[in-house]
Length: 108
Image: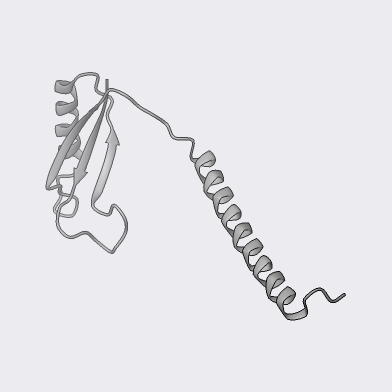
């Protein structure tokens, strides 16, 4: 298993930074008891001052890790936007074509 500690300073946050006051830290532990001991030591060492004190800690036991192909996701988003823009452009051109056809009829 893989273990993470979610450390939360609590309160309303800091300066509007996303995730401010939250930290997700991968642990070296290989069991839940070892993870608890590691987190307790981490609090003693790094989070014992008034400025760094945490309000809540959750230990997460991860059984499955799935990595998302972010580059492919962004490429799909880009392609979808481009297709929508092309569809809007074609619609506008078609509307203009029919408007001009109405105005000028079959004149050449």
